[in-house]
Each structure stands twice: as structure tokens, then as C-alpha cells.
Image 1 (cartoon, rainbow, N blue to C red):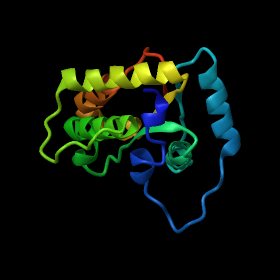
Image 2: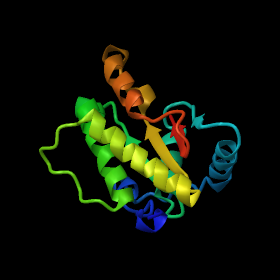
Image 3: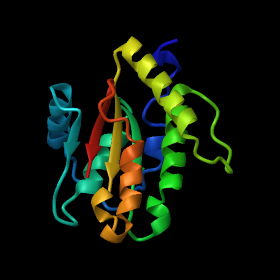
Length: 171
């Protein structure tokens, strides 16, 4: 059982991305640069810029491309719920399960670290077997207030850094 059982990126990650009536500026050249960096020695790329520069739009364009398998987390500092570690863990786990073609989590699911790692390992095994990459796209870590730095760290701790075949695009 290889990636033929995995769902494409247009599943949950793309569905979680909000759309706007305002036309977007395509950033294909920047996306290609990110992909080039991630195909070399780098496991992660951090996109930096001033507020309003287009970081979120870039990461949304990256995540919603159906040719890539992505797990997307788009954080807004406007509400603590948007960066609540339990909610982010639920969203990430839901997207991993969707990529694996497994049933969704129940609404009352409580994050279980062991189960989460088991799903990550299964995804990694399948992707290595099929020579595929999964991109974890996390936008808005820099927007979490310093007073809530434990929440930021809890989100970072969810990410399987250093595990092949996972790559990371962060802002």
C-alpha cells in the first residue's frame, strides 16, 4: 500500500485555506525557489517579511496546489483559539488521516501523542516507499504573542522535524 491510498493535497489542507474575491498575485517563481531549496539539503524554509507583504498568500498558494501533498496550519493571532495547541494538533492529525485515507477524527477527540506519532510514522513509511514528500506548511507562528510562547512551542513540537520524507515551509 503506497501513495495510491493517500489523498492529494486538495483535500483538507486546501479546504482549510480561505479564498478571497480579490485576485491574487501568482508567486510561481518564489514557490519554485522554495521547492528547489527543499529538494537540496534543506528540510525547512522560513519565509520572512513585513506584515502585509504576502507571506500568508504565498503559503496558501503553495499548500493548495493539488500536485503537492500538504498539511497546512494557518494561524491568526486574532484569537487564542486559532493557535490553541490542542486545536492545531486536532487539525494536523485530521489532515494526516485524510492523506492516509482513514476516517476523520470524532469531534470530541482528545490529542494522543502516541497515536499521533503512529500516524506520522505510517505516513512517513508510505511516502518513503512511494518516493513522495509531504510538506508541512505553517503560517503565522511569528504572530503568536510572546506572552503565549508556550503555545508556539507546543505547535513547533508537533512538527516531525528531521524525519524524511517531511519538509517544512514556515512563516
